[in-house]
Amino acid sequence: MTSDTDRLATKPASQGREILRALLSNKLAVVGLVVLGLLIFVGIFGKAIAPYGVNDIDIPNRLSGPTALHWFGTDNLGRDTFSRVLVAARVSLQVGFIAVGFALVVGVPIGLIAGYYRGGVDSTLMRLMDILFSFPAILLAIAILAVLGPNITNAMIAIGIVYTPIFARITRGSVLVVSEEVYVRAARSLGATNRRILFRHILPNVAAPIIVQTTLSLAFAILSEAALSFLGLGVQPPNPAWGRMLADGREYFQQDPWMGVFPGLAILVTVMAFNFVGDGLRDALDPKQKSVIESRGQSA
Amino acid sequence: MSEPVLTIRDLAVRFGTKRGIAEVVNGISYDLHAGETLAIVGESGSGKSVGVLAIMGLLAQPPAAVSGSVRYRGNELLTMTPKELRTIRGKGLAMIFQDPMTSLNPVRTVGYQITEPMTLHLDLDPDSAHDRAVELLDLVGIPSPAARYDEYPHQLSGGMRQRVMIAMALACNPDVLIADEATTALDVTTQAQITELVADLQDKIGMAVIWITHDLGVVASIADRVHVMYGGRFMEEALVDDLYASPRHPYTEGLLGSLPMPGAERPDKLMTIAGLPPDPVAMPAGCPFAPRCRYTDHDRCSREVPGLDSLGANHEAACFYPLVPAHE
Image (cartoon, rainbow over all chains, first blue to last red; front, side, top):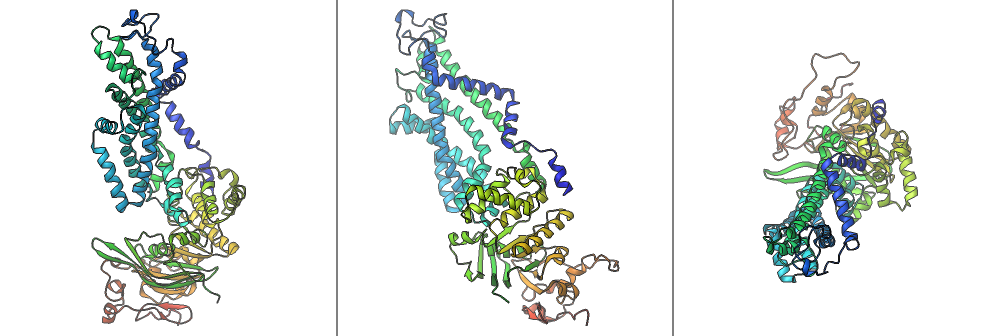
């Protein structure tokens, strides 16, 4: 028993705290987290903070460029770009979270079932996913929107469908490995049901790659929303959206470049913030840094 | 003797492989009575683990094909629906595995994993399940069990994890505990502690134990009966003392001869058994051990498969020409 008690002297912290510490020691990830915090704040309170109404038209002051009154300048109708960028944050984040949420809720169970039951179920589900995956993302989203009709709800569904196969694949790959583990067999030997094994034993063990993919997909989903709105298939005017504003700014780019620059920057900053957090999480969840897996590796 | 808890008849397991059909277990039969310890001994690939996995219904079918009969308290397990089988796994029959490093879920606390079989089989409220789990941790000799309850497997050493596995297996007071090479991955000191622990618990709870191992040293200290397995068959069955005192099958003799015996005169060389275990895809036509047997010069051995023959009380060997008992 001495060897047992010796090892306990250096008691490692709980996994969650370890991961958080690793994440916070990554400077870029912290920057990303701060920016995300600000974005979410703006997303919630954007309308209240905005100095002007999003549709307050002021033709005499149109295309003004940044001034003390209009920090980001005004657009072709004299609307305050700063206010519109703030208010549009909500819809971008909403689309990101809801679309990725949809992809998670549909894709992860597909991956779990395919990887656990294998055989015909696996082939059928994954070939379906391959069909979705083989289309370029934006093209597939446009096709879905063409069928459903262009509005913001349908844009969320379309982006969600586009990202579903990614989650299904990532989940399935990890499940294939984890379901061979002895603890899965041990759980079965104790009388656990398949559903219990899948959701209580396997899912938490495949969570790390899914979490990382979620943050990275949020960035891409927001980018996709911007692209769809840019093409006129997402948020419909006169409601503000970054992609839509960018498209409008393009027409006036020679007269007043500022009109397109700020919504473009908003997209850039948001996507980068999600990417920083995603990269940070990937490093923090890296199996090579986790003592759990380390000790497992030794025995193998 | 009373009704056996577990009755196994002609259990056979075959796997379809690319090279052909692998006959891994070839018709084994035995009874297990309440409270007894049966050791199944054999080298790697002798089919001993597959045999118990088949009993628990833990082999995926296909590729495995299991035939024969496994009766637990009179109920046939092999024809049970998965749902019926789940009510017996973990409650009537429980199992501990070879490698304690991989047999606990790394993302669940020790407490979660011990209470899980209770939530599955016993109608316990969370508080009593918690109390029972702490009790079990104490029972398997884990110091400060209440604190350990909330810890994760990576915070425990290998020996501790195997104790936790045993606590999980004992959670619902099973009639039969199957230990599949449960001490193989542990160092010798911990090995001794774990075997002692299981023997202790067996006295307290009265369960039967099937101890699968390749280590004859472990067997000698804990088993009542020993079945020696080779090529998917039982070669010899005997009470543990009889087996050590006078092995009647040439394979058993070889196994025992390959062990260094403390106290005995030191031989120049330990005995070895030439050759390799038989390929399960191409089993020899006769006795599976014939190609490696140092005594074989009989045609019969390579033509016919010997059955288990009684050689006196509680001693059987599957050999046409059993060895003469040492003490006679």
